[in-house]
Image 1 (cartoon, rainbow, N blue to C red):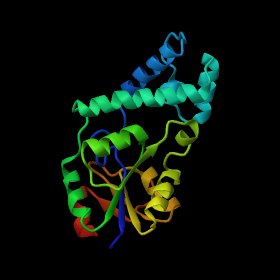
Image 2 (cartoon, rainbow, N blue to C red):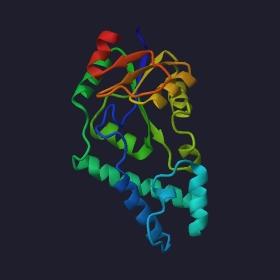
Image 3 (cartoon, rainbow, N blue to C red):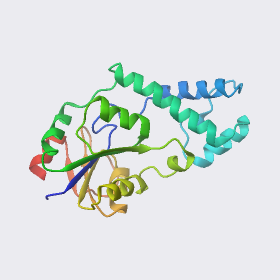
Image 4 (tube, rainbow, N blue to C red):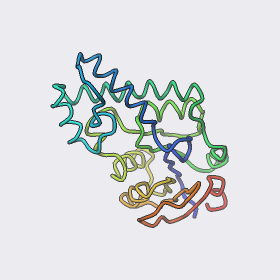
Length: 215
């Protein structure tokens, strides 16, 4: 199929590592608590790896923190730490990311990730990916609550590119669900075992290098 635009998830698709290392968030939360003058003996999981916004708010209430500024600080601290790791070579693009240059000759490319906006933009610039938009989550509570499988990030990107003639390439079924929610096709990238569950993607691929023939 001749899609006008190809959207890519980042972690596990373009960049090695399925997600940000939890230690990055532990360090970011420690910095947040220290700078906010909050003493805490242990690791507040509701700030390190929260399941939802309600858990963040509850944790901040228990710590005597205002949730919105504490969360914004945590997100920006995590971005600084993660960007240093990327620049230091701890996370690098997969070899098959080289196909983006070929795809960009005839299509518009973009990155849409649940990762933080500052890291998504940094990675796209640092590795010089030929993408028109690099979109992640902003450092706000509401943005955390609208990560994929919510279609918000994809819808935002498609609207700014002015098209719905698009394919979203991700490595999780939540990526497929997000694509379905905004009415576009999805390609599920499986670099190893195929993820269990649904929904079913439009295409299954094992490498980004398959995309030119697929398209």
